Image 1 (tube, rainbow, N blue to C red):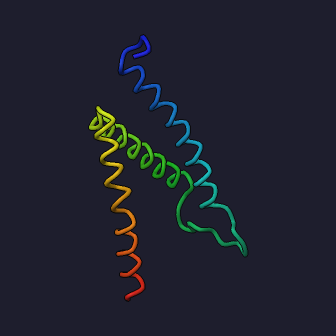
Image 2 (image 1 turned 45 degrees about the horizontal axis):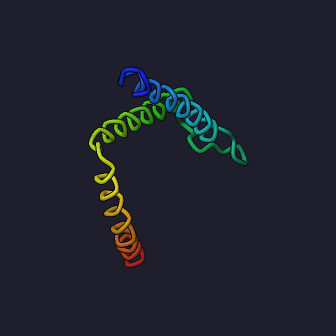
Length: 104
């Protein structure tokens, strides 16, 4: 594809989105550990470096899972069908969740 080996393309996409996740994780860690008002912090008893590493590893593992899932969709029709099923069942699931919340 595009004159390069497949693993090079996968690695470049992984690196690109890793940089995006690194920036988002840094912003999220800052938001979690900045004084909101009155000296309060969202995550009071955690070290920012631990929070940063935990969220970064979680986002990288989530991105790896998404790459694994994309290998299941080799044809566009399979993706289109799964998307159609997802779009059709989402309103039903949302309404069921809302009924469960308002019922209790």
